[in-house]
Image (cartoon, rainbow, N blue to C red; front, side, top):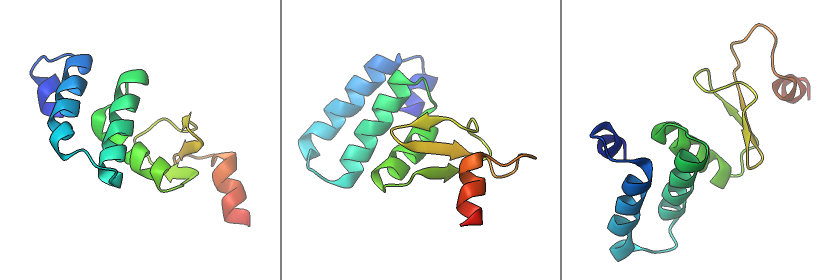
Length: 100
């Protein structure tokens, strides 16, 4: 996906290509569903592909908080909230978690 987009392929075309590539081996594995969710996040939320993969894997694992200094603090998608643990004033979700 990243290589395709870096070479001028649109997000929609790159997503179609990846789906076509996956079709012969389509199975209900978690890797396939993680990739599908990542592609959806990349397209719908205009996120970078690798960030989308991290988010998708976290969502599928049932996480509610993802600690990251690279993503937007407080960004929430599908019940997952990104929290930057390095900011001066910690996100209320992280503060609550650490106090319990």
